[in-house]
Image (cartoon, rainbow, N blue to C red; front, side, top):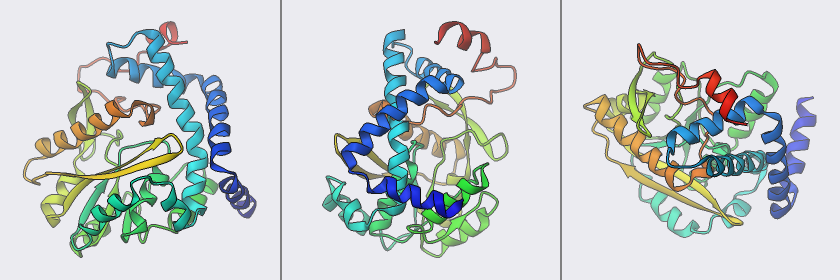
Length: 294
């Protein structure tokens, strides 16, 4: 079964890119109809983060977001099976991006990645010019987890599990670069509430700890789809490693700016605000989701 799935995913990566994106759009429309609960979460997240949007605008953005989710299935396949040469051709500012990566090669770097549906495709970009390591959260489906791990091992040097933070820290201390996605609700342990779109969101303190322990540089890594190509970028975030709240505000602000600028790219399907401060009502009220959002 594993070999069959790998062959199937490789075949998907061979489909011409324009046809991939068309199929992805159709797949996104199907997912929008089928994943009713997640569709409502997407709409509610957008509604709460962009309160000035009317219902029609929220629905349009939700549909656009599902289009990108559908297309991301193919982008993930491409990240696992495209050659470096083919991948580079899809980045319209590849020379500029390479220069930025070359400039940080001799330092230890924490590359923070906002959650998008095609996150594997995004993190493939710096690996074209820089040896990178990354943290991997195991998928519930063991077969898909094996597929992801094998795929990521093609462009990530070392993969750390969530309970291997010490190994990740050692990697940074030794001057290496590490990828980390900080913008999900990982629970109360080692997280604090920080504003995100004017709502309290549990935010993991790990990036600030890494800066304090290793004096690493911190960058926000992004790659967004523009027509038939992608725009890749890294921007330095000036974390001090002295105050968790100050550092995490910088991170959340940078990711919020990304999500505001590239609304349909962000991973609105995640229940980012599921845990609330003590005494605060649920962020995702069942009645509101059921009654208002179709």
